[in-house]
Length: 108
Image (cartoon, rainbow, N blue to C red):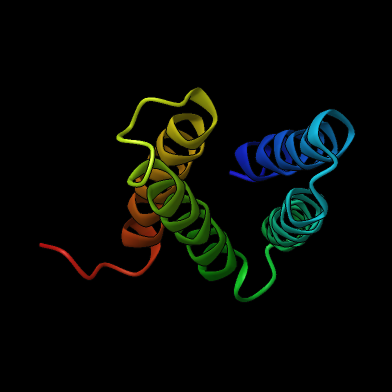
């Protein structure tokens, strides 16, 4: 269950660094590394079966989804990076909500 969190952590770090080095975007660097850190920490918590790992993963995935949505709407869903953020955030949110529901059923 921690593998997707670690993978997304790496992808967000690489994405933030690419945004900075290609376009000089400091917000991309900061946001990418911040989301990467959150995913990395949630993966660490999940790996050690600690409390709040799933909750942090769901929250971070939702944050990625909202960031992708807020960037995709103004571009008319035409640019690839906002769409990638939207898809990764949506899929990971669904995955971690499903896992959360397996451990703490909230849907029948």
